[in-house]
Length: 231
Image (cartoon, rainbow, N blue to C red):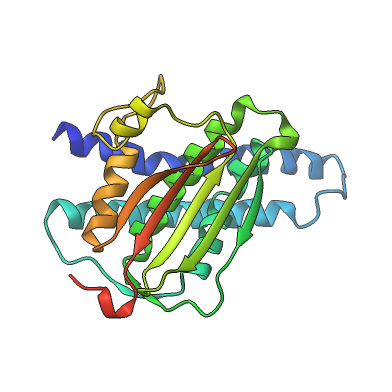
């Protein structure tokens, strides 16, 4: 019960935080428009649209967690992982802008589709992206860069790699980072990576940390292609 409650809190935090950010921005934009400013044309409708999208996303997360708790079949579909990454970046746009983080994408060409639960894998990637953003807080603004790369190996397994140039992780941290309730953050639940690993393994995939020679951290989500996917 405690683990499920903490998991729900963790998963819902991201869309709810985005809603709060967009609502605050919408309030400022409305005030500027009331004073006759024309510099905000088009921005207020965008903020309101994002609030609606994130609210719907929070509902989807609740439904997915309910299905997991009741051991129901999750909804899987064939997904283009490049499109999936682009969707995640749209969800994270406010966090990236607020923290002045630049994204560099390197999309593989001609990748096979993956049979997966779109919402669950989005949550995994959002968690990795959020961790990368937090790790870059100690860096100067001009060095806050996250690279996301998609590729396919010789066995047709799909790879999504999220790399940051933050302080990196010690050897002790690497061995424990996927343990439930282990966290180095004052307000962390210690469930983000643990839940992510559970989700990825349920897709017959794997998630792991890879050392970066220049420092920082790199996390790889490895998923089977269409021939290797299944329940």
